[in-house]
Image 1 (cartoon, rainbow, N blue to C red):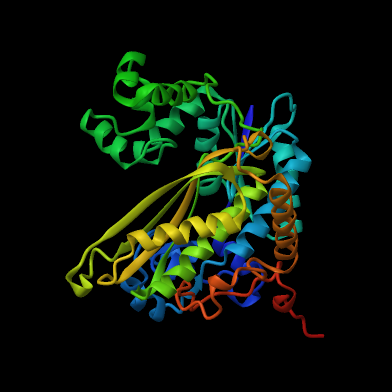
Image 2 (image 1 turned 60 degrees about the horizontal axis):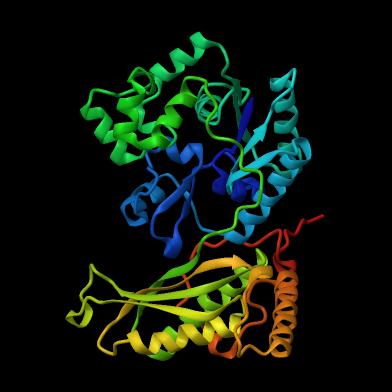
Length: 419
C-alpha cells in the first residue's frame, strides 16, 4: 500500500503562511523574470487565471480583483519543503521524495491507513502551516488518482482508493490527459484511438499498449489495474547531469557581463556537485540570443562541450573551463538573452581516477578550500563567498519585482512581530 502526500498550492501556500492579510485572497506566483504564472491559490483559480499564462495577459485581472503577485522565492520554498519532508520521514521511514511538494510513503502493513494519514496531515499543518492532500492505494499510479480525488472532491483531504467498484468509477471519470505519465502528445494520440478516460485505456490489450506507449506505458496501465510495477525509490539518486541556466532580464552584449553570469552558474554547479559528493568529467556551456527579437539582425546559439582529463567538483576549475570555452563561442554582433552551464559525466567523488599529472597535495588543498566556502555559504547564504569574476552589481540577475522575504533562511529577513 502506498500513500502520496501532495502540498496544496505549495508556492502560494508558502507565501500565505507569513502574511495573514493574504489568507483566502487570490495569489499568483510568477516564473523566472516574472514571466508566467506557475502557482495559484484556489481564489486565483476561480478568477480563470490559468497555469502557464503570461503575466502581462492577466494584468487587467490582477488589477480588477486585487490579485497579490509574487516572484518565485526558491530559498523559502525549498526550506519549507525540507521541513515538510522531515515530518513525513519521521512518520514513515520508507519515503520517496518525488518533487519539491510531493512524496510517496510506504504504507504496507498499516491497519488504519486513513487514521495514520490524518495524523500526518494534522502534524504538517501544525508545524509548518502547509495543507496537504493524501491519496492512498495499492500502487503509485492509483495513489496519484486517489490524491487527485482527495484534493478536489473530499473535504478531509484524504482518500483511500481500494474498492474495485470505486477504482472503476474513478478511472471512468478521469480524463486521459490528467493521468500521471500521460503528457500532451500521448493524450492527443490516445484520443485519436477513441480513448478519452483512464478506464478506456485499461480495457486495451497489453500488446496494443506496449506497441503504442512503450513498456513504461504498459507498467502504468498495469498499476491502474492494481498490479504494482513501480517501486518506491528510497535510495539516494545520483543526478546524471546538473544544469544551471537563466534568462536575463535584459539582453547582454558585453563579454565582461556575460562572463559574470557564466562564471556564477559554473561556480554554483561546483557547489551542487560537492553537495552530492560527486565530480563531473564534462562541462557544456551555451549562450542564446532571443529568437523572437532579432537585435542586430542576428539569431545565434553558441554551444561548446569541454571534456576534463580528471572529473572534478572544484568550482575554480569549472569556472576556468567555462570562461575559456565562452571566449571561443562569444560573438560581438549578438545580444544574448540566455546562458547556462551543464555538468555531466558525473561519478562518485570517491571513485575519481586521477591522471599522471595531478598533484595530490594541491587537490587536497583545493578540496579543503571548497569545503570552507561551502560551510560559510551554507551558514550565511548562497554566494556570500564567491569569486571576483562573479561580479558585484550583477545587472544580469533575474527580474524579481515581487520577491517576498526569505523568512526562514535569512536573519535580516526574519518575520518581525509587534508586541
